[in-house]
Amino acid sequence: MKEIESTATVLTDFHSVRLRDLVPQEKTCKLLAKGMVKALAVKSGKTSEKDVEKIHKKVRTKFSQFAVSEKTIKQRYLSIWPENYDAADEECPIVENGRFIEYESVFPMYENLAKNHTNPAGAGLNDRMELYRLHTEKHLRKLYNDAHEQPDHIIHVTSTGYFDPNPVDSIISEKKWPDVDITNFYHKACNAPIPAIRTANALIRSSVSGGYEKPKKRIDLVHSEMFSIHINLSEDHPINVGLMSTFSDSFLRYSIMTYDDARKKGLRSLKIVAFKNMTIPNSTNTAVWKVSDPAFEFRIDPMKYFRLVRMNIKNFVKSFFSDAGMEFRDVKDRLLFVFQASSSLILKQIAKELDLSEEQMAFSRNTLYENGYLSSGAIPVMCKQLIDDPTIPSGQKIICIGYAQGITISGMLLEKV
Image 1 (cartoon, rainbow, N blue to C red):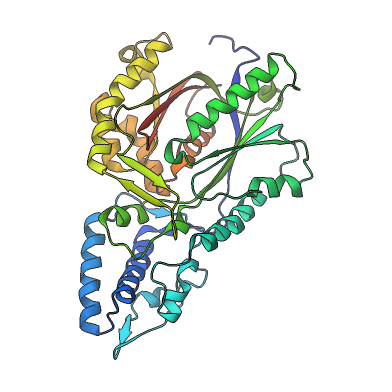
Image 2: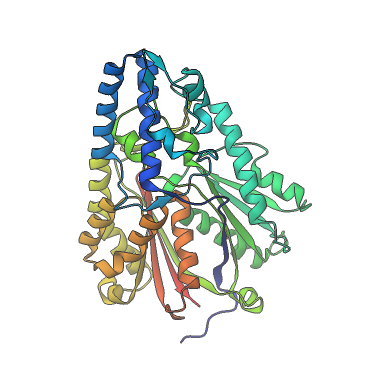
């Protein structure tokens, strides 16, 4: 194997954290569906058993048609899943004798809906942001609990909660790390990790090349995605049903450093080889992630979105490898593929366009199945799995591809070392 330059940069030291068990997909959909029935009944002022049963039937049909089933997603991490969850609540009626019935198993944004039969839209954005802050600080505190080495810089990646000072500021203050630089990489949603890694890579390489700042030895990337706080039970649009049943919360950190520094620390790593990014022309209105009250709003034309990604993915990959001095057709069968696993449909379309086998798609498909959709956390989680997998040898090249509103497509070529 070709000797690796000591100044080559690598991704390494991946850590993820969950503070509760993953929830079976069937269970999450049942609680979401019940909450939606209650929200729509309160919103419309319907309290008779006959009227509520009509709403129930409508919601049941929407979930059967548009919610992601347990065949595609086995389980998800919802950090605000009710601690007092009782499966018996799912069977309790919503109304009885023309009156709403109180129940306990509820997401914290919807306590007034479940107990007081008011506020079908749920808590406002300020309250949801406070939930984000509290839960994110708990997760990041756990992530950095055993971290004794101070990073030179932290890039905070999220599309679900914005504060200043943010949870990363709180953690470095608690750790008494006064000279850690922080860069906020916000609102890039699903395609955030590759551009964020590219930014970190540029920062560390420019700092070691000389100049007016101290060379950076380690830059951490911290992801804190809490899509669960943006659940909207008062809208039964098919897109909303699909989103609520897909996203999973994710909290993780990992580092960029030189290969030489990682080797000296005994850290397994992935060498960064190349990056590429593109924005598909005339696509900006196809998918929009918008700050809104009471919850962030995602607007998408799914058929157009999938079609544009499908139509552009092959040319993007071919030009990516051409820029790196390779022909995609010559290396395709020797690559491992990591796709941002947002849905089984788009994975199927990508596989068809790039002529990839089920085996080549299995890694991304299994990540979606085992975790739900992790948004910006998806590609880093798969990178950790690649590093930890002893059957994947050193020298193996990995192509990571992400896509999101914009519509942007990003690629990153890695090599296990």
